[in-house]
Length: 202
Image (cartoon, rainbow, N blue to C red; front, side):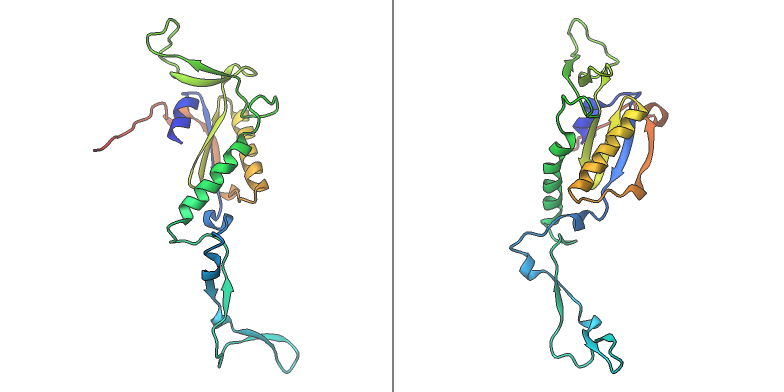
């Protein structure tokens, strides 16, 4: 996600923040592991009819334990983060869609090189960035890190449209967008996020 921020963000960009809800419950457990994953529901008992004909749970005197099969990725399982991020990575292309489509808020037409030493070099601009000819400004972008998604573009309206597209497409793939955790769209200039600092240790 750092590279997408570097190549799509500037001081006047508006950033949106989205979160996926119940990250591990959005994705399926590997089919080979499903027969060995389950939840012990013995304490809930088995369903029986009482003398009034009402269905009740009975768990006293049970000879065998009652298990329900679990089919979603599990907390604490080493493969879960990999499965979730890999599967959502496949969805990123579908979210981006056709970059030449006029109604696509993530549209871009040109990659601009603004390299030091070049004739038209402008130090206040990014070295490499995508341009949208429709707006004449930096193209919208989004990046994911586990269950956190950031979107950004040059206008507040564009940021809203980009965030809406991401949420709509993820919901289409039955991945929850946790709108309750959404934050207001803010400009980098207001937040003071006009620089990136990377620490390389070792």
